[in-house]
Each structure stands twice: as structure tokens, then as C-alpha cells.
Image (cartoon, rainbow, N blue to C red):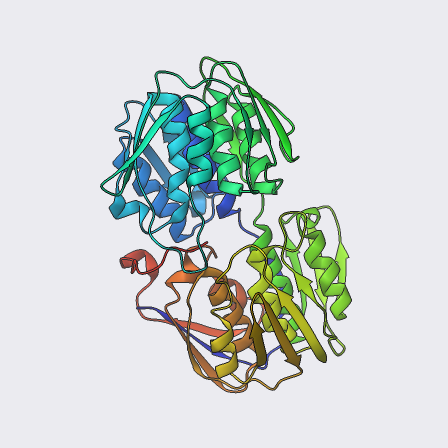
Length: 434
């Protein structure tokens, strides 16, 4: 099993190009189910979750060409004849696999999708998807660990989500594109990833209004056609590297990103004492002085993202004063705390709030990643820790960060991977995380 070995103490300087957003790429790949024609997606990140999605689509009969390097991070997907079964052996390794439910019902009239297992960072029940699809005419039952769904043809409906759900909004958006009549979805997620999926669907012939707002209206069409779409930049990868520059006292320029998607993160970095200079597609971040403590509270977009909470907590350990970190999205997303404490952090957790007292001198330790974003926080802490930190179970970080060790090494970090490269090994399947 791969590990990272990181020697801290080096300020990061230089430029890093941001990869495509895996949380946009995954639902966009699922959207290809809605047409027999070829769908081409560009700026696909080279991460483990994309390979898992490829395996899932291929297992259902799709033709998926996935290329990197000279292929410019592109995938071509053609879903001709489909076997509408999402097998547990694949679904259990990635929660986002459930996004095929809506497209399969809409396209084939039937779906058999394995229920994902428990999630390390908290429950993300699929009942919101099920309730909405039933309102659109689907008959859904749970049998032997699978969701069995049927519908002669979905019809439009008024759907009010009980709580904001990104995957629920995306799943129903795809289903509504081929439903009869109008579907009005309220209390929708406004994340950029939802808007990215809507742009692809529109390019395929869908009729969508209001994507990116709390109310989305979809006029169903009889069929969708092939299209080409470029995945937008990964805002969480960009945010992670912004924190990497700040925590090491470095000077980094991020290229190929969208600063608008990171407004809440940039605002907090400035509050901490970090300089941020923005253009249309770059962010330069410099941290030359002492950092100040600041409070964050995770919220749905455009609030501070839950996927940046662990990284900000690592930064808070190096800021003067007390920072309060409140997690409002997931109920079990402080598992990185015990590992940061092992490195010397002063953190106390009470319910959904963690109090981080800085500045704390961090020292190298053997630590273990528990989920995708927790692993990123440990990398950040290791970049400033005295000595050589060993991070185990880095398959988590491979799920969502494209060759992070190579990008960090290119701007001065002393980081290396030991063990087998993730593409040559099978992923352990103990956790399913974001």
C-alpha cells in the first residue's frame, strides 16, 4: 500500500496548473448514459475515481475511451445497448456511483443499482433521490442490497428537496431531461459542479433554466444527442494548494482555475493574513508574515465548502490565537483531528465545533489518512512539520488529486511516494468517501 514521505520546512514557490474537477467529471460521465451518441469530455482529471466510473460504465455495456497526456485528459463515451445494472463490487468503492440511477431509469425504463455502503465522513442517504424519482413515476424497491427501479416513462413533477443535496440535484436533473413535461426542482444545490452538468446536458439538447440557482426548471425532450464538453477546474484542488502556499509561507500562482468558485476560501485566507491576487483564471497567493486565527463554518455553496474544512484546520494550527471550525454538512468529518494532534496540534472538539489553538510547532509522525480531504490536511501539516512524516493509506488522496506529489515537488516540496503506483494496484474498499 502506497505511502507519502514528506520532510517539512520548505516554502513552496512557483506555479501549479489546476486539473479538471472530479466532482463535475463523474456526473458528466453518468450523463452519457442518456444518449446512444458519443459524448466527449475534456479536462478529465487523472484520478482513481474516474477509473472507477469508467469500470462502472463498461460493466453496463458502454464503450469508454479514456486517455491522458497527449490525449489531453479526454474521454469518449458511447452508451449503445446497456445492461442497466450497477454492481456492488464497483459501487461500494465510490459513493458517486449512485448517480447512474436517474439516467438509467430515464433512458432504459429500468435500473438495478447497488446501495452504497457506509461512508466514513457521515451518512449521505439516497432517499432524497428515491423520493423525487417516485414523484416522477418510478416504482422503486430495495431488495437484497439493490435498488430495483422501473418506469414506463418518467413524467415531470414538482420536486422540493427536504435538504440541499448536490448529487440529488444532479441525478434528478439528468432524469428530468428525458421525462415527459416540465419538472420544477426547488431547494436545489447551487454548486458549480451542478452548473457544469447542466451545461453538458444543454449541449446534448436538454432544455434547462435556472441551473446554479435554488430553482431549476427542465422541459423534457424525446431524445438527447452527443456533445463535447470541457470540465471546469477543480475548486477544491485549487483551494488545497492555496492553503499549501499559506501554511509554508510560500508564493504560489495557480493557473487554469476559476477564482470566482473560491470566493469564500479566498476571503478567509485574506482574513488569516494571506495576500491573494486574482485574474480571470489565475490566483497568486503569498504568505510572508504571521498568520492570524479565524473562524469558519461550513455551508452549502457559496458558503465555505465542507471539502476545505480539514485543510483550513491544518492551516489554523499555524495561526496565532484560537480558530473555531464548525462542520455543518457532515456529522463525522473530524477524523483528521486525532492525526493532527499526533503531530503536535492543539485541537479540542465539542460536538460539531473544533477549537484550534495556534501557533503550534508540528513534528513529524507516522499518520494515517481516513478519507480524501483528511489526507490532504495531513499532507499540508507535514509540509511544515519538523522532520519526516509518513502518511499511510494515500489511496484516499489518489481518488481526488491528480499526481499531487508531483505537483508539490515541482514547487519545492520534499515529498516522495513509496510503494506501488495506484494505477497498478487494487484499491482497498473499507471506506466510501467524498
